Amino acid sequence: MSEQPYLTFPIIDPIIFEIGPVALRWYGLMYLIGFAAAYWLASRRLSRTPWNKDELSDLLFYCFLGVIIGGRFGYVMFYSFSSFLENPLYLFKIWEGGMSFHGGCLGVIAAAFIFAKMKQWSFLAVGDFIAPLVPIGLGAGRIGNFINGELYGRETTVWWAFVFPGAENPRHPSQLYEFALEGALLFVILWLYSVRPRPVGSVGGLFLLGYGAFRFIVEFYREPDAHLGVYDIGLTQGQLLCIPMILAGIALIIYANKSGMIGPLPALVPGKKGKTKSADKKPGK
Image (cartoon, rainbow, N blue to C red; front, side):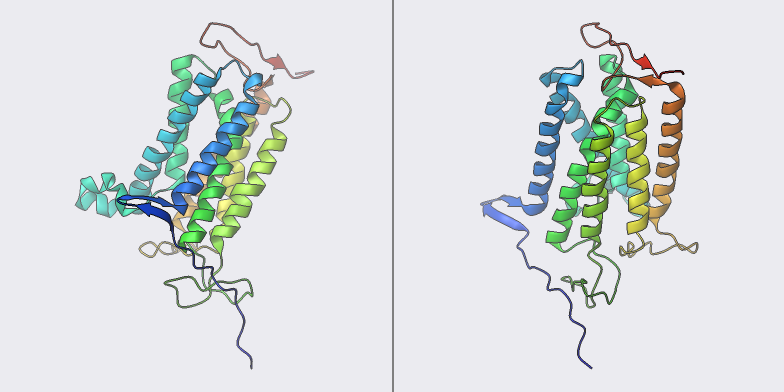
């Protein structure tokens, strides 16, 4: 019986180049590419908003901080709370690794809410503007995970499996599954859906629903965290965190459609200079 063939994992040095103590890593580069692409795409839609480029840069900077702070805080609270109880300073040891998307998502939501209040903008409209940009960074980050050979999937015998460094048996390339679903496909869905004016809050709701559903599915193929494993109910920590996300997305979509507020992206409230764009009601509603 011939041995089952598997794909050869491409051994790529995680460090692109290193000059003294400064090193450029693929993982960091992927996030820079994702951020740059998000800014470029946001700039293309800027004419549909009451904002200027400086305000856009400020908004994305706030969101970037939200990703970093929320991502770290979420990881510690959701995945490594015992380490935090043993040593509260563990929260600040970012160099030891550990970031959570769900925490980063909460961080972005908080940052967008604070920024919207500061500028007297509609929080839901800001969310609708940001939502289609997020999958770009997600997809880029998953490519970085794959290059690093980390966050791989569960053991499998499918022909497209990889034997990752540090893993004895073939594994699902779950990083690529996440890139395809949470990155590429979710971006296409949100971008095409938001091309036309939609009920305010529905784009953000669709993001929460879409990401939550895709991540829930991929978790069946992704290796659970070693210290948490799979719970007795058959779900992972990531899946449990996706459930409220999915429910929140559905609730937001229902609320947005019932409110009947439709307007140009991001339609809708006094801007910095006091100018107001009124949202239109749905025909017949």
